[in-house]
Image (cartoon, rainbow, N blue to C red; front, top):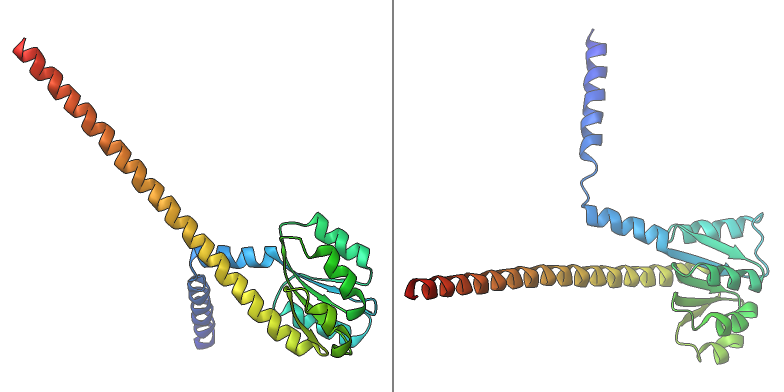
Length: 203
């Protein structure tokens, strides 16, 4: 009997914990959903082989920061996807071989936030890369790219929160303005009614 009692007690305690788990605010939940849906990492490199363990590990590391990671070995497919999906904020990781042409093709896209060059020789790509402000660095390993990506995603998060707060403040201001307009109209009507009543009494 004691065993059954302890099982029931345990199940009840789990249910209680689960019931209390969703303590995050609605705004936070919406923000997290927005982040998952609106950020994408594009990895463009002719040498990507998804059967290789190092490529799988790279994608796993990137997905720890941004949920959606799209690998491409062809420049045209990468550009086509970006042209067709203009709602997502894009972070591009590109090889040096593809990077110069890719950046010139997509740089003016408003959804492009940052570009990271992932290559074997930094010196070879410094000259052309420094001409583009959205190129955040040239790296020979994935770890520093992940660190830079994480910082840039956090910055985007903060920018989105600021925009949301500004929008909320504008809504509140409009509500206050509407209330003031209603009160003003009411007071004017009241004055006109009182004046008419006085005029009728004098007549």
